[in-house]
Image 1 (tube, rainbow, N blue to C red):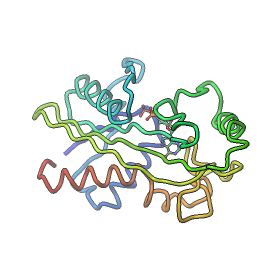
Image 2: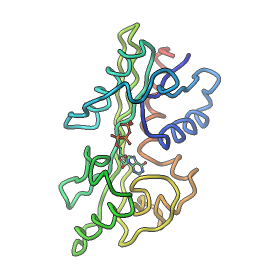
Image 3: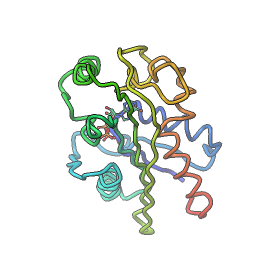
Image 4: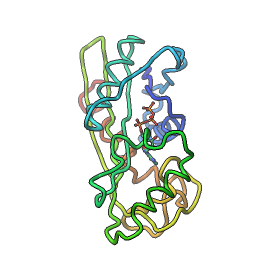
Length: 202
Ligand code: ITT
């Protein structure tokens, strides 16, 4: 089965591809980028949902309708407990004209006096088969803390200041294989694909 990953984020494609490799289903599922099919400029999606799940479904509906094929989408973000889960669903939009280093520094400044460093990444993964009217959406999280400084350059986005529970290094420092074993995205897509397999949907 061909499944199109509806995302404009190349890092997500890399990670989801590795996750499928680990699940040993690459002979069943051919992961393709939605932008093999359509011009990225030709589609605008207003991610105006209040939750990751809502935004993931909004993207899946829209991409499914545009290409008329099975799609999967990912809506994800960083949530800092002491800041009322900021930046949350706005993770990608927060200071979006600045590089992540500048954005992380701004967040570290906001957290200067905060002892409570707890945070989590959330990922809502959605599968939408427009032909058979099937939609499955699953959200998973990885819990951790925000470091006092930016460390490492692996991964993307806010990885360099997030330390997953049970480790001392940030996602920026940990090898990509470790992130891909324990991340919000790994958990969400593993659960999603296992569910699709168990239900014989793919
Ligand atoms: P698409 O909507 O096209 O998929 P996007 O990057 O805008 O691409 P989201 O709206 O889901 O995707 O925003 C996710 C943002 O959350 C992402 O840009 C990062 O800032 C952050 N984020 C999500 N997962 C992350 C991860 O694994 N590591 C670091 N930051 C992450």
